[in-house]
Amino acid sequence: MALTGEYVPSPSEWVRDQVEAYERSGGREANTLRDTGLPVIIVTTRGNKTGKIRKFALMRVEHEGQYALVASKGGSANHPEWYHNLVADPEACMIQDGPEPFDAVVREVEGDERQTWWERAVAAFPPYAEYQTKTERRIPVLVASRRD
Ligand code: F42
Image 1 (tube, rainbow, N blue to C red):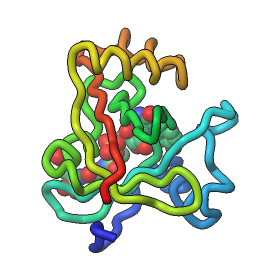
Image 2 (tube, helix red, strand yellow):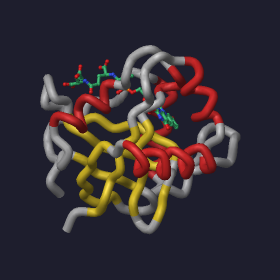
Image 3 (cartoon, rainbow, N blue to C red):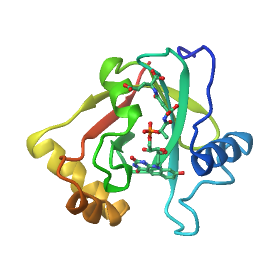
Image 4 (cartoon, rainbow, N blue to C red):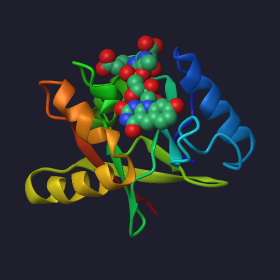
């Protein structure tokens, strides 16, 4: 796998626990957001300042083998840190949606393409629409594709 280095678990306890349980069980446990029943994926990046390996959970927004990574952070004022990591190094990305992670490359989508993915994202996880109303920033949407 391309992403090696020192892994630093998330400082956010619920995210850290979700990643740990998902990875330990190969995605059989901790595969939804709390008790919503809505599926999540696990994403790995490299810190653009520290170079450390970072992992976090996102809602699963999948279409024809690609995944939208929605940088909503619950509608907070600032982009999540992982967004900056992926913009700085779009190939430093692994996605886990099931037993095994795979290498991915991401790109930020804009215009009509963003709108199409945004609609898919809101269909998968309706609170994204509310998150957008809570913040002045336009929530970035990245699309992750499998890398051979
Ligand atoms: N977050 C979303 O944004 N969208 C989702 O769809 C989503 C779903 C979801 C489902 C389940 C779940 O458990 C969590 C979910 N989250 C979702 C929360 C998500 O997992 C992240 O916790 C959240 O988006 C915040 O991301 P963050 O990267 O800002 O995380 C913080 C807590 C964090 O890890 N901070 C680290 C720290 O040490 O403070 C820094 C991490 C980092 O990457 N640092 C960089 C480095 O170089 O190491 C520097 C980054 C920079 O440029 O400053």
